[in-house]
Length: 603
Image 1 (cartoon, helix red, strand yellow):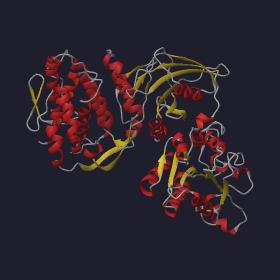
Image 2 (image 1 turned 90 degrees about the vertical axis):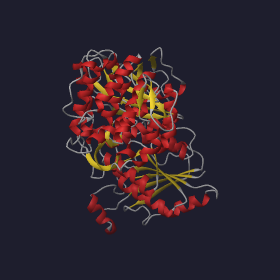
Image 3 (image 1 turned 180 degrees about the vertical axis):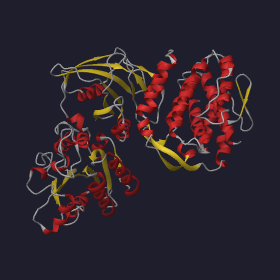
Image 4 (image 1 turned 60 degrees about the vertical axis):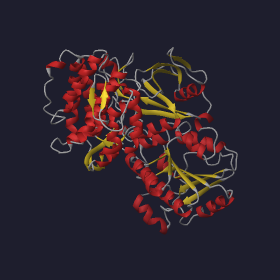
């Protein structure tokens, strides 16, 4: 397979590492934070450096490299307007125009440098001739693969990708999001969306997947030699296979000793561990959390979190490093305010009797101090909430199977009969017939970045009472009530114990009570006497606080408010029917709430 790597403007004037607070060398430099993400503290060990070391090690002629270099002559009349608009940068034979890596170290002879003087890299250059020659060598039954890295994502990278897509429609073209950057993180991700949706370019988040796309058999991380002398002390229950240990050694390559403790959180099956580390000089480093799992999933979590990283508070993490290998990826999170010692999840706090005062303070920290930074930037987006929350009649068969597994039967028509001889609306019938008959739910709703999977296991409290978040795999721009509905759902059907049929019958009544509210976010009624002194009293106290916090981020005078809350409630209750974590009676309770919520749509 013939592949081509094109690097775009990886030069000092664009990307050289800067210390925090250093002035920009020119107005085109991407700045300290983006340079840190792309290049790292050390060019040799950072993402681009490791990747280029791998590229330079390739001996096969199946991978050719083209370095596009901004290259300006200050006294050239044809370049005067460009230099006037962007000011002096990348002047010929200056340090600012040098690549951040050595383009002469490659063992592969297929290396070409293209000097570009405009925003169009094909104008006045040999780029077309070079690509035509490489394309002609590709076997007739194979497509030439072109991969792009570099800066700026929304300008030079986007323009180059567009030109390639229109000039070479029979080639495969991909951009690696981890190896591209811009001066603005938001513009970087907007440009990646345009590349995917408009230009039709493949966006690859994992550096390991990108190297495989180019024909590599090992990742840049695997290509590095590692310090085998690091002492790793792990929990007795923690099993470290060779690939996991390799990634840990890479992430803590500047250490002499690290200790890992599995955190009480997360359902994904990935390794989530708190890490205390001692550097090579004997200093205790700030605490970190590592997450290791399937490579594509970790790459998606990294890019999802990078979109919100700059606006989160001190109790939220920062990405200190990441790496991937053949099958797994790893993220190293730094938590500035995390205390040492044991940590517990918010779920554990709910289930083990934390006081209402503490629970309210934890919820305030999550929804006001941390995620509130995102919610307060919400804007109205025109969306179909039923589509956003994945309601579709094609799920009818799956819903029927889950109902049958849970209660033993599910009629095609007519009511369901739940334990306790409770009659309920047929949820299967709702999905199969009624859903497609519902009026459109297209409207203007508040959308902002949301965590996307805010269960109590993804909220961790350390011994100092600091509250911090993990697992940003599902982070996206979404409905501002989504996180609140998800946490309330888990509070009901996972954290509220239902052990007997008597508990279950009372749970049905509790759902009827919650669904009877005229308005879901204000003037919530007092808890009826029948629930006082039961497990539902504590649950209701937390629900009231969650609803109070949610009400801050929505226009309570909007007539769609009740539907905006009902739709995600129904979505998560249906999802809970098939959860492994709740017991059978808790899942039956979730089914009852789902049937009642669905029935409300028909009235």
